[in-house]
Amino acid sequence: MNCKEGTRHMCSQICELLEKLDAPIYAQPVSLFNGTSIGQHFRHILDFYTSVFKGIPVGIIDFSKRERSPSVEQSPEVAAAAFRQIINKLEAINPQEKIQVRADFSSTSEAGRPLIHSSIARELMFAYDHAVHHMAMIRIGIQHLLPEFYLDEAFGLAPATVKYRKEGVVQKS
Image (cartoon, rainbow, N blue to C red):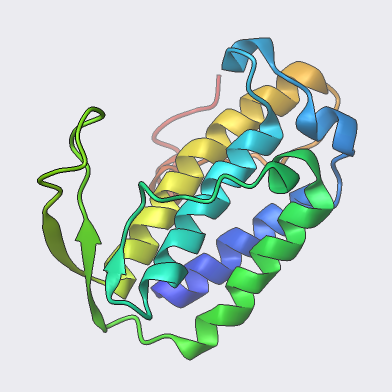
């Protein structure tokens, strides 16, 4: 699977789940998340994908300049529409295109944020890996709020972990 296919798969998987979640549960603060919501985690995933696509026309991706849209945090329908837009934008990009990423190593200073050379494919891979991490947390939040809700056992797992478990090396506890 290449980066476009991986992104399409990730966003489609997210949309499928969003279509099953009610807005009150989606936006409810979760004690395990220090009061943040499942919706905030979806919004955070979206912010990273959106940062990639906003950076392509200017040649610089800046993950620190995220939109943080409250409507995406409150409404699974709004979030699903935004993820579908990411899917629709995939065909127009060249993953091999070079791009720069504005690094951010300090929470106290904007000065001295170096540019790191990268590619669109590499940054889509970063957004994908970042999404997997947050989907694992979303899984925990859903299990906490809706213990009977069914999630595929691979939801929130990295592809390497799924493969590793299929080989029978690690048994689920």
